[in-house]
Length: 216
Image (cartoon, rainbow, N blue to C red):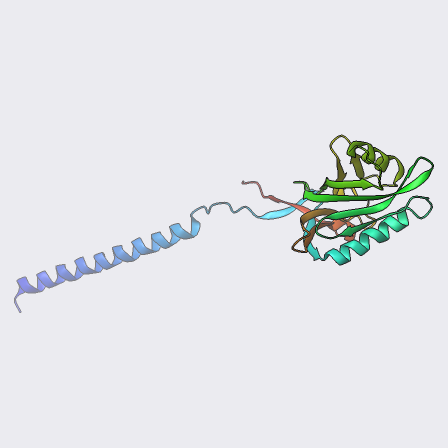
C-alpha cells in the first residue's frame, strides 16, 4: 500500500471517530436535558382545614301497598288523641276518606286527588272530585272544613283557593337526619320512588374538602 493511501485511511478513521463521538455527546446531552428539564406542576388533592358536609343519595322504590300502610300508620299516630279520623287509600289516585263535623253532626267525606311531583321533590295533590255526604257545598268550602278540622302535620298545607294540598316531603323532620324527596309517583303503574340523602355527618364520618395544591 502506498504512503498516500495510508494517509487517506488515517484521515477517514479520525473523521469516523469524531463523528461517532459527536453523536454520543449529543445523545448524552439530550438525556441529561430530559432528566433536569422542569416538569409541569401536577395538581394533587390534599386535605384543607375546612370540613365540608357531604352525603350520598339513594333511590328507594316501593309499592302502593307498602306506602299506603306507612301513611295510615302515621295518620293513626297523628290523630290518636283527636275526635276526627281519616285514612288514605292509594288506588288509581289518592283517595282521602274521613268525616267532618257539620251542623252538630259528622258527615262522611270522600276526596280524590291526582299527585304531581314538584321539581324539588315535594308533592302537590290536585283535587279531582269531592263529596261531603249528601250536602251540596262548593269545593272551596269543603276544603276549608278539611283544613280546619282534620289534623295535619306541619309540612302539609291545604290550599282551599287552589283546591289542592301541598305536601312538603323535603321538610319532614326525620330523626335519623336523612333527607327525603320524591323521585317518581305513578299510581297507575305502581311505580313509586323516593330519593334518600344520607349526610356523612349522620354516620359520624368527617369528610375533608378536596382542593387542588397551588402551583409553585
